[in-house]
Structure formats: C-alpha cells, structure tokens
Amino acid sequence: MSLALLAVLGLTAFGSTASAASPVAKDGKIHACYKAKGKGKGTLRLVRNGKARCPRKWKKVAWQASGVSVAGQPGPAGQTGATGAQGERGLPGTAGNVVVEGLESKVSELLTKVQSLEAVLKGITNTDLKNAIALGPVVASLCDQSQALTGQTTALGSTLGSLNTVLNTVLIGFSPVTVPAALSPFSCPSL
Image (spheres, rainbow, N blue to C red):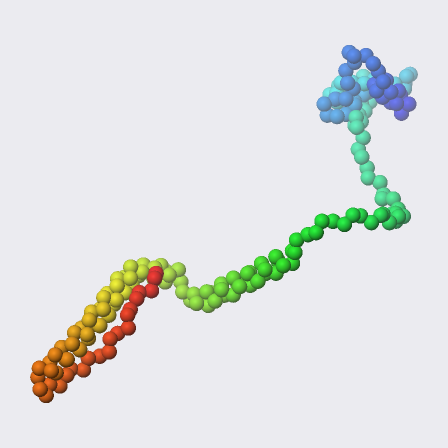
C-alpha cells in the first residue's frame, strides 16, 4: 500500500498535464480509496474530497498534504569560537550620570514640597477648600476696607497732632490730647 501511495504522490508531484486538478482538497488533505481485499489488493484511487464514497471492498484513507513539523531534541552545545578582533572605539557619549543626578535632585526637591503641602492640607476636605475659595471675594473686600481704614486713621492722627499744636499756642494751660502713633501702611496680600 505504501508503494502505491508513493507512486500516486510521485505522479501527482511530477505530472505535467495542465488539465489535471490538484489532489489537495479544501480541507488541506489528500483523499483516496484503496482496495482492501481481493484481486488488486492495495490499489489506490484519488478522490476529490472526504465526502466521496468508495466501492465495496475499498476503504477510505486521507493524509495531510503538508506534514506536521515536529521539533527535535536540541543538539549538544558547540565549542566556543575564537575571540574576534578589537572593534573601533565608539563616539564619545553624553554625561548621562550628570543628567540623571540633576533629575534625581529635582525629583527629590519636588517630593519634599509635596510632602510639605500634604502636611499643610492634612484633614482639609474638598468641601473646606471650596468654601475657602468662595470666601476669596469677601476677604478681598475686607482687605480693601482695612487698607482705607488704616489711611483714614493715620490722617486723623495727623490732624489731631496739628490741632494740639494750634490749641497749645492759643490756649494757655491747655492739656493736649494724646495722639497715638501713626499706623504702618497696610497692603493686602495678593490672592
């Protein structure tokens, strides 16, 4: 049977008729019927596909058109080759460590600032932050009023000082009013 199979494969592989159909079916197999009993036992006939019926005393057979690759055992390791010649010297590189160290320093500095900020914000909720932001215009208004009040208080102190000087010269025995020292100028922090 194997001799007949080889003969069919040889004819299929080396046949030169242009009208001959490929023996490989759509499923990637070659299908055939072979005579299992009687006169002509082992005769092989190719069929178009696996749905074809074989005559009485014939059996179906099929095989893959392309074999399955099987990986063999790895061979022994080869001997170590001879040492190659020294290669040319490469171009000078950049000072990578300097760049990395600079980045590490900046990352460390940022980490310290983040930890400091986390310590300041510890326990403050998102709602607390939103409420504080909402008070920004109120704080700005109070700051403007404080600035104006400081200016008016300083002007009042100057006026009282001048009035004390005039009254002290006009009235004998006049006891001047104590005028507090002028307030230092007030400026609002930027928000």
